[in-house]
Image (cartoon, rainbow, N blue to C red):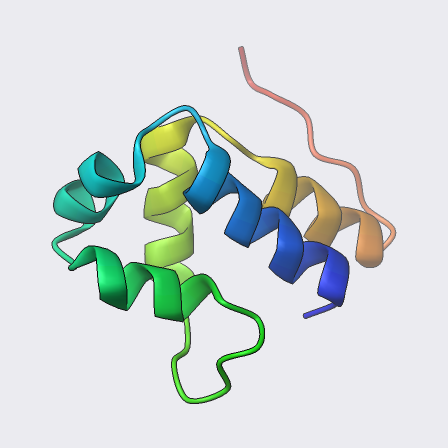
Length: 80
């Protein structure tokens, strides 16, 4: 992933509409684990695709998805 995508994921988790503690709980993770998984500088902890989808579902934030699509020359569109 590009740095832009990594930063968007980290920002969504750390500063998004759902408090970090609540998000971690809903994901079944500790805060420490979740923070490590979204830290682009921590190469030993990885964020899985399923977890990313859940983060976006829980928070309603799709910026990481938008950036991924943009990188592939696609656009996303809401079904709503």
